[in-house]
Image (tube, rainbow, N blue to C red; front, side):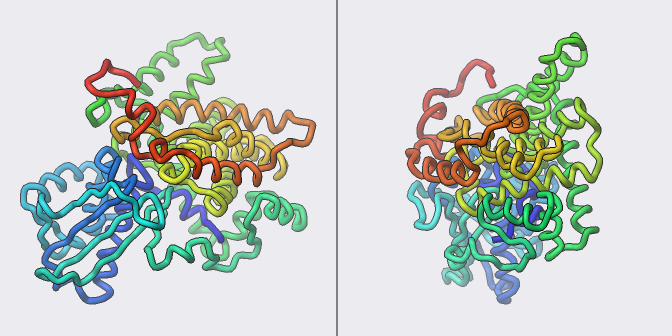
Length: 457
């Protein structure tokens, strides 16, 4: 199963890849199918049903808004963020929706959205979209949002892990990946680019990498210059901008300030994500601050990152993310936060090790360390919002990723735990975690913290 950097590093909007980005893509896919089947003009109203984790935390994750935007023909990479509030106001007041941006249909306040606590059989994040012509159901589709903005139609679910494209260096485990590097005398980035060329030209690859980098750095800039509370009942204050101002006035000889800068980079992007800003899935929106923060650390405090170095970083990160996607999960609803923050920490540790001159084996050791100490991490967002504990968790994981990379390069003995073993462990641990701690907001901090509360983070 080949997973491209175009698939893993998607540009979209916050706050959640599984609960916002995926549902928006599902809505758009539904509209596209209506067009393909010549049914658009027959539709008089549409209905959305969301299940499981999508239902339990959907409002806090803006799942309802995302589905409506997708049904209106919007796409995550290009949707006008500043126009979303006006769009929702118009839909709610008129109780209509411009389906695909061209055809007005009914979308009543009562009968447009249905939230179901029960789970659909294939995955924790399920949704059914229905188009009606009068009272006749003319198209009924079930989608699953399986993490990181990836969606799968119910009829395709059994085939989701099958290869759909031939690449020169296919692998399904870290052991196979390392063997390919050794046999072909290739670095991880070289192997990654060779596989991408099966689908894309070098020009398209480099253009996507440029866009990804621009969105990451724009997120840091916007997040580190914006004050005020984040959306939602918790009124969580943005902290990145104030932290940056303090750091700019701090003692330049305080070596530990570097850690605070890393925290600031991660907080900035995570706060942008929480405010429904534009971010890059890495591997998810909820964990989108880790990979850019570690990159910014290297760029600011080690050496400037050239486009070639950025490509090396992303390709190394992508190999690791692909292994988790193929053999475990990157969905908080399926395996808890170890599938989001844990994978992001693992990816960033690998990417940093690559920039530090690590061998492919050392890169995988860094990735293993990054995950090993995130095993069992719960996903219990307060009020179903990607804020508490999610934002701080990105900052902590970014520092952990740096530590993991350094430990991997400093190590002289063979590690006791392999990357493949920790991936297997993460998945099975995640499946053992009670559903209350897998993005349902039914346990943990989600029960302990209630608004109104003192302003906190």
